[in-house]
Structures are given as structure tokens and as C-alpha cells.
Image 1 (cartoon, rainbow, N blue to C red):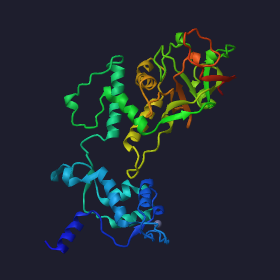
Image 2 (image 1 turned 180 degrees about the vertical axis):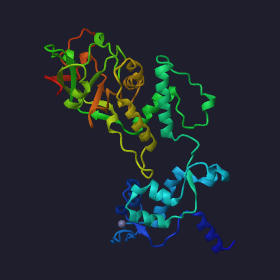
Image 3 (image 1 turned 90 degrees about the vertical axis):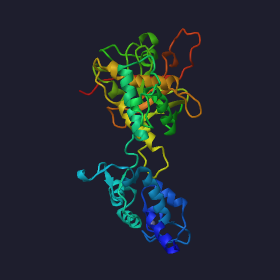
Image 4 (image 1 turned 120 degrees about the horizontal axis):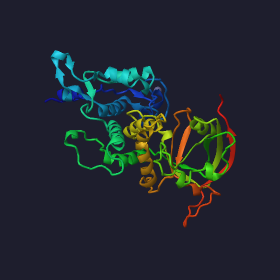
Length: 399
Ligand SMILES: [Zn+2]
């Protein structure tokens, strides 16, 4: 085969048109992943999109950018002719397909301004019919979400106190990313570490707890307003089974008050201060889902964003609450007793979004009553105080 013929064939196999003198600068893209790729590959002094020039290299070649773009696209889409079922009687492929035009302009319109998309598209070939890569199986994030669904169902309705068997159900094989109920908590722990959701909360941080009461029966002591003593921890909560002590609060007074208001007309509002730095799992600050071009744990973030919605989900305080709270109660115990940070440390609580106050953050802290300064206890080895009550006031809901 002659050289010209071979080059022509190689060109055919490529998914983009080679270009000798086209380049693009990072400012012409909005996507952080593409921007940083360009910044790492500056070779040219002129940007073909915005026309900017410099004596220093400020742009990456169109070829390199096209290759990077296609590499990432290829992780999410594949040639439908290689994998998708086809039926001419049904009018073509039996799964959703895309042209390159549709991938660029319909699926990835936010990566840059229209001019940039046009420039990019003009460098790409558009003669492949694309389908979702591995459309037959769940993606890792989807598999985690499905695993969480099965886990929740299992602890609500199958087994709560004895954990599950590890035998793989033969009917469920074929899902390489499947997460079985007995694997779910460890998978959750890994996702939390990957997405760096453990946050240090410094000593001095304030926290609010609110309790409703009858007229003239206001609460005033740290024992009444801190975490309940074990003997009084009789009710179930989102993050505790009956009998297990957790201190619920919020990072601001309005959130604590709004979360607590319900059956009472009078409320005692206590403000606390942390006496030491603590680590918490912060579900209120899960990053936005990164683009396919960013070097971030995208699948874990997709799952955790779904998961945090389930954790904050409003649950009607009726009889079913004892069942509906079970999955988060198990997660709470896992985080309290088994979870470790990347550096092997344990955490002292969970922050999660308020479902009643926009941008409000709830806190469930794994503290016992005696960990509030001034609470008497008769334990042989009392824990040292971690919280100080600063003030109490009474507040009534606005009618
Ligand atoms: Zn530019």
C-alpha cells in the first residue's frame, strides 16, 4: 500500500479533521476540564476562535483539543454499529443514538459559547452513529443508587439487626457495578472519602437546638437542651433509633426553629458552642456534578447528590416514621462506629440539608448528654465536655 493511501486510511479512521494551523485558548471554553487541558498544552501564539495573539504560547492546537474531546466523549458514547441492536422493521437502532452534531450542540452546550462549539464541531467528523457506551448495564453512579434503594428496602422490610448474606444472586449477575445490600455501607464510605465530604468544624462554631414546651414550662438547663440523657432517649429520629442518643441541631437559629416547630406554641431556643474541633460528614456541600471533561469522581458525586436528597427527605410524622427512618438510622450508626476518614479518624456527626429552610444546614452530632459542660453524670470514665451552652431564649412561631 502506498504512503498516500495509508495516510488516507488513517485519516478515515480518525474522528476529526487534521489541522495544521488552528488553535484555541482556554478563555474560549467555559468547561473547567477543557480549560485546564488547554492550559496544560499551550503551544501556539494565536487563538483561532477569539483572535487573541501573544508572544508567549496561549493556545493548544485544534488536533490536541479534538483528541482530548473525543477521548472523553468515547468514555460515554460508542459507535452504535459495534454494540446497539438494530432492526430495520422498527426503523433503525433500538436504543437512543446521537450524531456528533447532537453530542456537541444538544448534550454539551455548556462547554463553551456557540462560536467555540461551531469551531470545535468543524474539526470533528460526523459520520458515526453514536449510542450510550455500555448501554446494557448500570453506570457506577446508577448502580450505587440502585444499591442504596435495595439496601433501604432490605433494612426496612427484610432484616434490620442481622446483616445480609453475601451470596450473589445469580439472577442479578451481568451488572459489574452492582452494589449488594451487604456492600452498601462500605461503598457509601468510599464515596464519602472520594468526594472529600469530611469537614473539620472548628472549636467556637455555634449550634442551635430548639425544644417545644407548654406555656410556662420552658427549658433552661444544659441537661434539658443538650442531647437527652440515655434514659430519656426514647423516640426515634432521622439519625437515631429509640434508645440511641444523638444531638439534633442546626447551624443557624432560624433553621433549628423551623425544623422544630409543629405541635407546640412555645419553644426554648438554646445556643451552643463547640469546645473542640470535630470532624463531620457534610452532606450539605456535595459538589455539583462535574462535566465529563473534569478530573473528578463524577459517578460518586452523582450518587451522593441522589443520596443526600433521600437523607433530607421530609417524612410525615405518622406511624410509618419508624420504618421510613430505618435506612438513615443505620447509616448514622455506620458513620458513628465504623466509618473512618482517609487518615483513619472517626467522625462526630453528620450535616445535612434542611428540607424546610433553603440553604439551612441541620446537624446530628454523636454526643451524649454528659458531653455538654455542666451536665452531671455518674459514669466512671466520663467523656470530656465538647459543647458549652451559651444562652437560652423563648420563641413563639409567627401565627
Ligand atoms: Zn480564544
